[in-house]
Image (cartoon, rainbow, N blue to C red; front, side):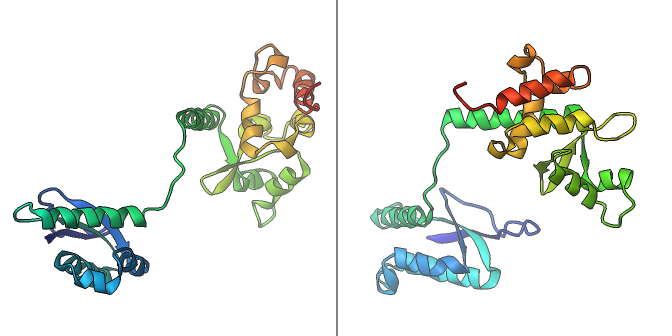
Length: 241
């Protein structure tokens, strides 16, 4: 057995050597060492196997210097029973250190993809403002985000989480004056927002609506605000009615 690649996970660094032969990969950091030793049967069991003892020695040495590494190991020499046993033990070790994951079903994956596409389309089609941009337009306060946060709390506008910040879809604001459309607040008051996430609320505006003849609320809001308010109210009705 030989260590044919030992690479820090820091993206600045490059591989220290080329990979040779059939290789198995194991990511190890300092917190994994005790679990690694335990999964192999303890120090005595490792000492009884020269190949495992060598592997653990090299891993310990590499981790001590690099904190977190990706160690790629491969057998060398004749492929005898010792090598096959070593590979079996390595695979068992990796399997034991891999957490159990709940794999998403195909229908769930399709739903996630459709939802992600709808979110992207909403932002690309209508644009969105940050709280700071709203504050710069409508407030002289030092905290530029305060005004948007207050309007959101009052139910005048709604926001959506996006990559660590809150965005406010631009269709809530008049394109000429920049002011919040009064009808937006009326619609938000009717939506069952206690049962909806921020994104569910946002996508309701851009989805075809049966109460609007298949039209999207966002397309009808300026011309028929009462119809959009009524459609929102129907969504908030108790189920089964």
